[in-house]
Image: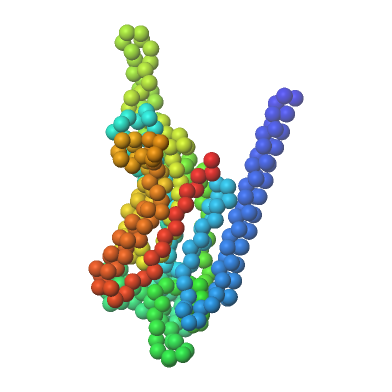
Length: 311
């Protein structure tokens, strides 16, 4: 009877897990659909004339779940910032890495090009682009007011109605991530290196007792921070994405030690202001545009950052 009850309990637990997975799957589907419909509604109702359309990158967090919808050549990134625990020693440094990035919706991508050409559009490829990747691909379309041909540097956007007639669509790609799953993978990678040394135990010669290992450091969830960055191509064209994410992490998580001249009035540690690091990045990108274009043109430069910690 005991074995029978235990078996039933295990089955019931499995059923509960399956039910929770199905519920989450339905939630993911519903939220993805809502985001998709929102982009379509914005496209249908946006005051596109005379200014034209825009890109859009939206991030929605529900608990540990992250929903990212993107249309155009702006992009969103999810990064992790790992702070070494005290047991790592004074020489250990914090590290930052990108774990996810949305794609740029460009006309040369196979599926995008197929759609545009199927709808009667033309994809412009700069000479040698397929070999070098240099230059900007565009969807060519006619301006109904002037009759002239224009080129849109993306295959998806909101409010570019004239280009929409030749295959430029507002439909976003929706990606779903989970901060808990991200942390689990990061911790498995960080702590996995110590598993091979699990059988190697240091012994105190005097007492004969085992000593804590000095070569392995155990990281926990509190050592791993998850955050997000969204930026326009005006920023991304002149700054490497890794440099952007690293600088944002400094603004969100790094602190200045007392005595470094940047503590607050109470002598406490002070976190670098995320607004200031965003300002740094905008100025750096603007400088790139200035040097490259000589003040004749500068694309829109915008950035948004957020911490994704739930506890």
